Structures are given as structure tokens and as C-alpha cells.
Length: 234
Image (tube, rainbow, N blue to C red; front, top):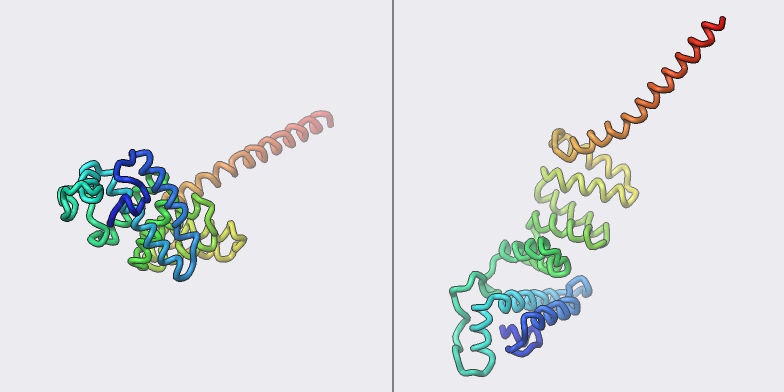
């Protein structure tokens, strides 16, 4: 792969030009914009864009690439094996997923979405990838029904994933599906009734109830005082 050709830039491009080219093309080839056979092509192009961008961010790998592809007659062999990133065909599913998590941590959500979709294309039984996909869809305002599918897949692969069950319950509530939301939440509570998310919800509920109890006590005290006054008058 020629990273300069992939990103449509010259070997002497500045780091800012590399970044701008990557973001421009990533928007064009984002897999969410396609369907059917075109989506597969888009996923492949998106994957190559990510690999080219990662390669050119590494000074040592970029130097090798410039020597190889700039026509300077230097090294014509493979890029240096001393770098920390593997060529695209040698990378494992987990490494693609770690790239997706890294993009997520950097708040590069479009890139993270593309990478997690590619991870799931390589391995559609990767539970953590479905969890990350659901989180990304939630943060980017994605289709809630797609979020439901991602969470259901995560739970199917890991039936004791209580956080995903709670998130699925909340998503069902947003969709107006109260019965399903309650059922999922009860199942989650049976698995781990002391989970921190349940403790947090219970504490919030008690906090909401406390002002009402105080108000009721105040009204009762006022009623007692009023009765006492009438009793004295009598």
C-alpha cells in the first residue's frame, strides 16, 4: 500500500496536510454512508485510509515510506520492522479493536465507528465491539434501533453483561417500550442486585422521596398545632 496515494497527497505533505486529507476522505468513505456491496468497498477503503494515516503519523515509518514511494531510488523493500504497528494484513481483530478504542478515547468518533464496524466484519462475535458500537451510536445520535441491536448482540454473547442490560433498558424506555425496559431491568437486577448502577438509582430515588416526606411531616405538624389551638379555645 502506498500511503501517499491512498490519502491522495504528495510524499512531502506536512503533518497538517496528512491529517486534513485523512479526515476529508474518511468522511467520503465512511461505511455508514453506504449499503450492500458498496458498503463492503467503503469499509475496505476506510480501513486503508486508517492504516495509511497511522503509518504516516510514525516518523520512522514515514521516512521509510517516503524513501520507497518518492522515486528517490532508496529502499524498495518492506517498511522497517522496528516500528510498533503491523502492516494491515498482519493485524489481528483485537488490534483493530484497540485502534477503535483509541479513536474513541481521542473523541474521533467517525474514525472509531468505521474501525469498530470493520472489527465486527472480521469477527461478528466480538462482544466488546458491540458494546463500543452502542456507546458510539449513543454519543453521535445514531439510530436507537441500531443501538438496541448492538446491545442485544453484546448481551447474547455475554449474558451477564449487566451494564449493557441497563443501557438496553434505558434505550427501550426512550423508544416508549416500557414493558421490555422493565423486563430487561429486572433480569439485570436478578443477576447482580448490588451493582453500582442499581445502588446509584436507589440512592437517587431516596433523595427524590425525602423532600416529600419532609413536606408531609410539616403538614402533619401544622394540623396538630391547629387542632391544639381549637382545643384551647374550647
